[in-house]
Length: 256
Image (cartoon, rainbow, N blue to C red; front, side, top):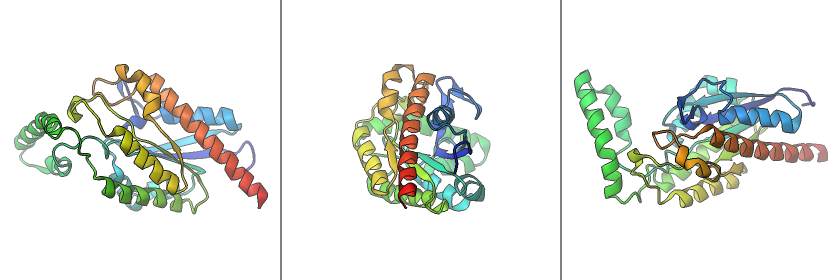
């Protein structure tokens, strides 16, 4: 592609891609890290960057894998044509384990509505207590299961571009959430494992929590989502990684 062509950026993420400390925002909100990434890439490369985000609340490696293998729009309209793919999942997988995640799928299907509301309320009250009872040492997705699913996600995302795209993986964030027990003792080891998996798969990596931690006292009241300054820091770090990977890719192309 020549200078001046549009750089197509696809992001696969979770709610941190569209929520700040005030709550969910529209896709074009300037403060969100994918939009910061696009602006920074334009400045760094001199090419207009157009970002398309696929994200929803509660995306873990299984949900991302299902989307990348079943959602035809995501597969062939978003990821397939992309010049850059950024995968930003894993945070929920590494959250401290409480009640079984399968309840998230079962509860919305309960009838009648009164029963559904009572069960949901009971689960929400009990979950943080179960996390604390377990010492927050368990993780929502066991490490071996996460490793298998995450490799599948990365391989599928790259494969959909026929190996043509620059690929960057963002690490997991952390939390100050009562729902997750207010603690996260295995955060660092989970981050190391995830970034190592991505690097082994040939992806450039960006640790996230180190950019968010300075603003942890200003997280959303839910204890998870970031203020605008943290979005800016993550977006700039992601743009630097993408720009470096693009430069390396260009050097390889020239040497052929």
